[in-house]
Length: 559
Image 1 (cartoon, rainbow, N blue to C red):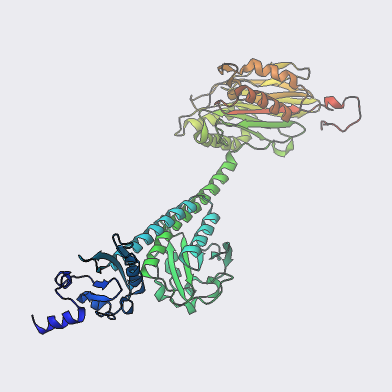
Image 2: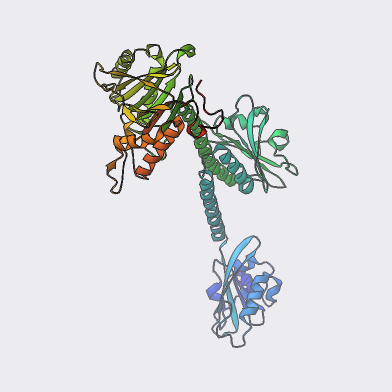
């Protein structure tokens, strides 16, 4: 045995004794400390001497061992017999390293052998795993909150609030500029987000121009906090900004904006791991913002187009009342294949043209053709005096288009007379209008014709009738008469039931007639599926209302 080995044995107390201490532990890669029941170090190997420089043989364990190991040894040897140690392993740190100490007793039971396993890397791995799990859970929650609404303002507020709570002390969400202003949303930890539009140059924040263009983010170490302009700091932010990070909010095709993250306090610069985490959040936030913005744009376009497809609000023209009612086939729809329009005559003296039609099909596809027919009819108003020519021109326009749908129409030209109103009624494949006389009698107009958009030529006959004060003409689509209901839900509402309902509508206002018919049909159908329904009432008001006869009142005077 050489001198180095002898010196090592003397320093560590490793001797070949009866307990078998020396030979078993001399070359152990982990620190090993042997102490007697009184807490005195009996021996330690080379790894223990290097890990705990203060430990020496024949000295108290507490002088060189960490407090947690000394306490564990005291708890282990508290029982005199020590048949079952109270502590077999314990965890603790020393000199920046994490250890797990496992205790065993020597054969004689007089000493305790502590094997200290360095599991610093395992602890770091566990901590990293815990951090990854927390980040994954946060990203899942953030995605749920961001995608819970397609409202762009809500998405901006959620992005700023989550960023200020989990990624930094404050956040500024910068949206693409609109009309010279720069929309920003300020997020401050513990406060509600604030929206503002600022007049600012994006070049005043390093990396912001690139982020708004969708280029890679600028690391925080490249952005001097002192160069941050005042508008880029949320109102109410206390203290100085010590770290700034700028990351883009990517969207599909075009960026949805950029995020400025602010931190304060010493040593608060963002680590590479934190910046990667911020980018992962930014991807989700950008997708949600882009989806909300796209939805808002599409909703605006839809509202503009829908405005032209919705049935118009009707009003009285030359003393004649016009009222319309429409109920689409789907509960969630606003437009469909039925429509009505009233076009006052030019100069206030020409005939007023009322149109009611039904396009084959339902929903948006039928509504598109409906809009085309309405626009075509508006363009053909100069031909309104000749119903047959107007229908011929409309039929030519529809048969030369690419669609395969057809339509039915009924036209009503109304001319105000001193003692009533003259009506010219023409049906093109449509149910003929019903005339409600002042005494309650109901007549069917003698008009019929062929469909529009099917054959090269159309055929139609025009009926002429006169309305006296208190009389009405009802135009309706087959969705009214073909509505199914009754006890077995298979009976049509039918023209007969409609005529009986109209007998009680004599001398009623146009709006009251429409409301009465709609209510009866709705009760008949109930919640069951049905076709589109549309109707238009043309009424010449009586000189006075029925309930005003015999007493002075202004009533509904006929101009």
